[in-house]
Length: 193
Ligand SMILES: Nc1nc2c(ncn2[C@@H]2O[C@H](COP(=O)(O)OP(=O)(O)OP(=O)(O)O)[C@@H](O)[C@H]2O)c(=O)[nH]1
Ligand SMILES: [Mg+2]
Image (tube, rainbow, N blue to C red; front, side):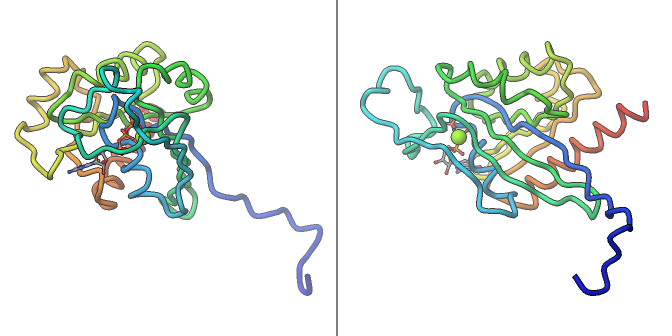
C-alpha cells in the first residue's frame, strides 16, 4: 500500500476477552447476546417440538419456540482497546456437557436469571464458583417487571458481596451493555486487587 512502512511495528489491536452468557433454560441468553452484539449473532437454535413435552419446562415461557443446542456467538466493542466475544451457552440440561468446552479461555461470565424461576440458574452459579471464573448475576425481569431489589436477590442466592447483582432486560441493548460493563469492572478489580 502506498505510504505504508513495511518496517513499522504493526499497531497493537484491541484486547479481546471471551465472556460466557450462561443460565438456565429459557432465561434469555440468546436474546441477550442478540441484543448487545454489533455483528449478526451466530445462533444454533432448533425448534422445540412435541418430543420435548414433559422434558422441557415451558412454564412462564410458553411463547418460546426454539432452544439453543450448541452456542450463541456475538461481539461487542467496549472501547478502542477492548472487544468482548460473547458465547451464549445452551440452557437445557441435556446440552450442559458443552459448558466445559465453552468455558475454556473465558475470563468471566454473566449468569442470567429469570426472576420468576431463579432456581433454573443455580447450576450456572455453581459452575462458575467451582471453577473460580468471575461472574455477575443479571436478573432478567420478564415483561420488564422487577419485583425484588438486587440486595434481596443476593441474600436469597447467598452470593458474596463481591459478586455484582444487576437488574436487566435482556431485550434492551443498553441494559445488556451495563451488565457487561459491570463484569469488566469486576475483572479489572480482581486484577488490581
Ligand atoms: N417478555 C420478555 N421475554 C423475554 C425476555 N428475554 C427473553 N424473552 C423471551 O423469552 C424466550 C426465551 O428467550 P431465549 O433468549 O431463547 O432464552 P435462552 O436462555 O437462550 O433459552 P435456551 O437457549 O433454550 O436455554 C424467547 O421467546 C424470548 O423472546 C424478557 O426480558 N422479557
Ligand atoms: Mg438460547
